[in-house]
Picture (cartoon, rainbow, N blue to C red):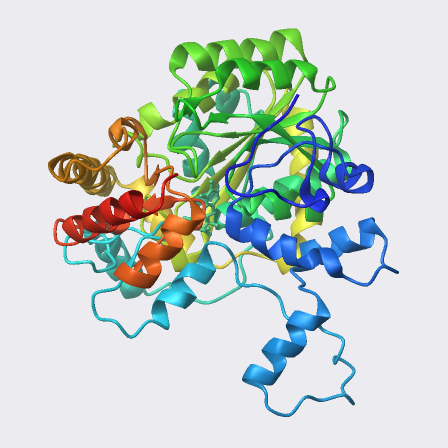
Length: 493
Ligand code: PLA
């Protein structure tokens, strides 16, 4: 079975079958395709000429460390450091490529053109193009700062207990039987990324099933680094069909059916990144049946956008709750970066739902063993803000209104961009702009078109053609539509 990537051919280094691990595929040089963001493919493309003395496994380790070959390093070194040191213990350190997503912000910041627009990283902007500090957050923060008992003591290893309890209720529902039965163990972590990493390392140490995690193709690029580094073999399942710009449901189910019993499956809880394509409730049911009834697979949900997809916290938690309420075991990584606008505060939680209260207690004791040597204990401020909002009925309601406001503005950007392309009679079908969900539109624009838009129109987006709708405004929609129109007319897809 082949997975076809967009853009040009990737080297054998990154070819892998959807049913094989990155590492074993690297070793075997299998002849199938992985749909990684092309900027990442680029970086890896360059890495094929590392010294022949390195084994393929070692080269893969280099990939994880983000290394590029020496000849590129010397070019960069002479560009940025006129004197090249040879007497350093670190002179062998290779120049790493920029991150495929966060590197777009670096490039954007370096562009002196005042008309530049950053649609790379998923960060919410107002109509005026400014970051948004939610009013409810400011209120909660002021109350916290005024508290006499405020201090900067260490938190416990698992963070603020109230935050953990309320976070579990937010994602699982306050009436969740697993919570009542004390089958849930929740630990505060460093936003979504930290929660995924802690969960991954715990699984690598203690999981009784297969220590293999399946991620969708494509997926958020960092998944491909987090899980192998956590110690899990990482394989892929088909998810997105570029032809229909929709879900490859049949392919997904077929790949999950072919997975070994007991493997872990990473699922985006809602607003799949980068595609904006989510299964329907009926499709989720089919996926759940395969995971629970046909195969004994462990679902690991990444919930980075609760409330951002539909504007409703409950609707966006539907799939997670469906899996938890069938009584089976589930992992969930939660992030408050987007839905509370707490990006830099790094607030998140990992919930592990298991089959018995005694197991949950022991799992938590081992999660502490993962966290303590990693960063000892999490930071206080952001989680204290979240806990005070979730604990207060009025603040909670206020947050829901502001969250819906952000989700609605993103949806209105979808309509404005769609209408603007229609007005310009831009070649192609753009229905997917309206049909996709959440922060991103996976436009279908190719690398050449994306690079042209950056060069000529100062519009920054990831090389796989993903744009952050949350970074758009009524002012910048015409500029983006002009750029897309011109890119599509100049370069065919
Ligand atoms: N999971 C998914 C699916 C994500 O899209 C992101 C963030 C995270 C987890 C992690 O977020 P956190 O650690 O900040 O809580 N993705 C962003 C940012 C918004 C990024 O790449 O870090 C993106 O632009 O894709």
